[in-house]
Image (cartoon, rainbow, N blue to C red; front, side, top):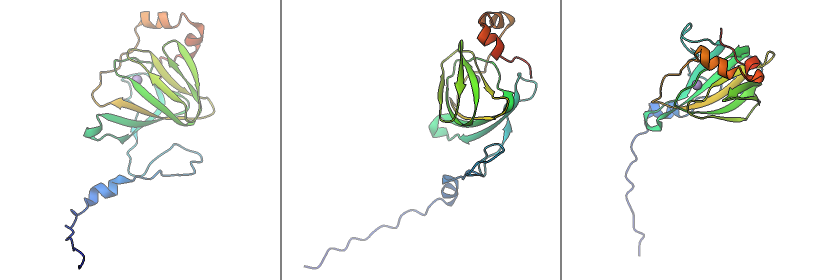
Length: 174
Ligand code: MN
């Protein structure tokens, strides 16, 4: 018997744009000095200047497809810089990529280094600070739909700063 020949349907043409988007390379694989960057990923200010206290933080959105319902952002805090002391209902899942620093989660001040994982639960005060002599670069995963961060009131700050370790850590000015 002769073998059965099965016609193979041609596959749909590849979506060229999607293929190009599938891989975006890190701009400096060895990552010497300077902030971590990726090709074709815009670099933004962390927040609108003056909207909240912070110093020396950039933000890059790495993944944000509608189907994911989350965003993966990369923040880089320059040496001596800090994110905003804030809390909100949405949670953060953080993966440190490089550098050194510390963060406040609730009432704990935690040392951070590469590949450390940090979870920030709902309505928990948090702040990230780079070391004075090193940047702190981390991925932060959040829901796309999320509430606006709350800044501490005077009473909140007073309560937080009852703990001397927290008091010496937090930064509430630029
Ligand atoms: Mn936050």
